[in-house]
Amino acid sequence: MRIVLLGAPGSGKGTQAALLKERLGIPHISTGDLLRAAVKAGTELGLKAKAIMDAGELVSDDVMLGMLRERLQQPDTSGGFILDGYPRNLVQAKALDSLLEDIEQPVDEAIQIEIDPELIVQRIARRAIEEGRSDDSEETVRRRLDIYAEVTAPVVDYYAEQEKLAQVLGVGSVEEVNERIVAVLETTRSEAGVEVQTEP
Ligand code: AMP
Image (tube, rainbow, N blue to C red):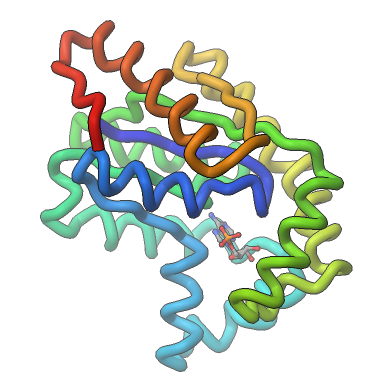
């Protein structure tokens, strides 16, 4: 199953993707994690990306597509994947579609985690302390939320038009949000005639 997780920075995509990975046995592909790994490894791309990420801006579409294409070529993605942090704009959404069309593996479901932006600012302030992410200052977070509203939100409509969008409420405990996502996926999978695994 090929799943795209959508939601503003701090909506819980990463946490939920990690849980889904365990439950569904498919890899969690986070473009933010891929970039952070490149930064840590000190690659040329990582050095360029760091300044952009620290400012809360988006890394170029070409770089991101190249990175994603390479990741999707890994054999562990053959049974599906959970994409977190990509697509971030319509250009990326269309590029993903054509990439997946080439291998006849279209996106099955896009799930948007909905949450109030003010709650997000509070959550990210906590994450800044817990994880020490250099792009988690309040100013950068507000910039990232603005970018989400301006350029990423249209991606939600893009999947809605394709009738692939499901929306879940991102408030409550991690487990509660996870149950909502699993319920959505069960519906999708039963519609697709795939047996559903309800227990983790
Ligand atoms: P994330 O961990 O998904 O919040 O991503 C952290 C940062 O990495 C973002 O604020 C962007 O600077 C960059 N990034 C991650 N994914 C993408 C993407 N698909 N397109 C452009 N920039 C990205």
